[in-house]
Image (tube, rainbow, N blue to C red):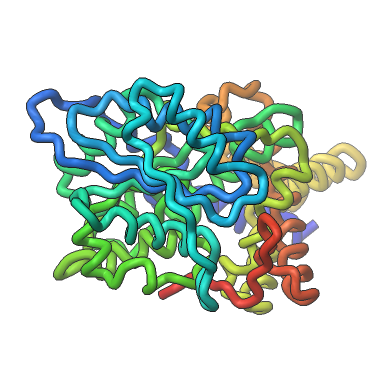
Length: 401
């Protein structure tokens, strides 16, 4: 029982550090402020990359066209060689919208070697918007629906905080047991990797963004080298956040990432396979295709998330059967407390997604599944299937910088 006791105590110490000294990653902060009426509203160019999105556009595009924003707005939808009539659906939605004149449809050129599909589509939007270019650019995905004043709130945050990049973690759909467990855990793990408070801290090297909703200053993007600087990045959002924070202005750009319920992904997420495909696409990329980092990740996920409940069970079982009160007691108590702390940090995210609180106790199960997904991502890379998405496969994509 000595090994479980030592492992349980080590896991508990790790959770104490995560709880108190890891940037408050588990708190749902910061939140987006309400619009300020006394601001001078700059023009905004919205760029939406769209590839085979005919089914989802009717749920998302009207919310972008109908933004209640006092300044000028242009919406550039980049049709990335869609085969399902995406452009025609966009035109129909534009004709039906009171603000349809805002929409400009851009047909994307063939993707050059070295570019990922989404970044090339965004680059086409940037190029198309250069005539009468707005000072602010909003990148948003084709499946993202926005509340009426989300653009005004984003601009308010950008101007008030003098930020070069402001991003929102869109609320993902979650229905069915597996997605209701795994989607909140996905956002939780993201915040653990990229604590939002450290992202906003100019003294910290931590940088990140959420690709579904990114507002940035055009001059900061240009100064940082533009999208060609991260052309091959599969994890485009965090690569963009890192680029702007390091090079967006002299001495480093200012970036901010926050939570919201007003920006929502309309893409259905109902089962385990949907989440699995989303994760395996970039999990091994996040590890820079390093097998050593993969081993470290598996060991770390096991120690931090799986050891606490295992120690509680093993120690408790030994106490009941053999009455070994010292090592078994240490194992059970340390494992139980670590599991409780883990659950406590996961509860705000469970509440945010309006799921039953008992789901917070299942975080070790979610962590186990994400660990298996990461291993699967590495195995797919070996088979030449890394980065597969919408009919495209990227063999070498890795985070830039």
